[in-house]
Amino acid sequence: LMVVLASPALVSAAPAKAAKPSAAKLRRVQTLLSLSGAGKMSRRIAVQMIARIRSAFPKGKVPEAFWRRMVVQADVKGLLAQVAQVYAKELTMADVEALITFYKSPVGRRFVTLQPKLSRATLMLGHSWGRALARRVGDELKAKGYIGKGKAKGRRGQGAKGKARGKGRGK
Image (spheres, rainbow, N blue to C red):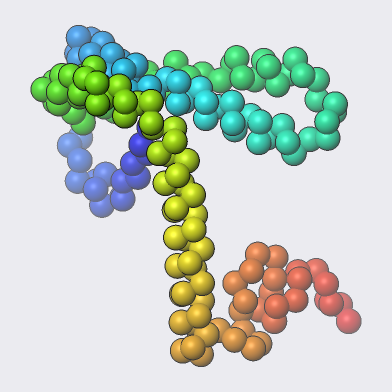
């Protein structure tokens, strides 16, 4: 699933009210989402999110039944219904049909199978790229004298002098 963020300028330039997609188009978009693996991917993400939340609690503090119920209650169908609305508004019926044809093809089915692996690999690349970019920007800021001794360090929980917040105050 792709998340698209619109800038306020783009939103204000949008038509006042878009036509509601037809039921037939929504059904075809739901077929597209099913073929693309969006439901399975959304379920996997929900399970991973709940597991991450769960890891913040000591083992045994929250009953296992609670976590199972949270996974069951993750409203993947509701999410997919909202995604279908977005796709139906942005894609033409010809686009939807072409994508359905693609996802039904051998290469489309292979792509769906590879998507989790591709997503993991590109996520790791993105993290690595982001860390390297942050280092380069930090190095350049230091080289130009914008940051350095006695100036903001940019670390969470630290003040301008690099001291942890709340420590050393009131002396």
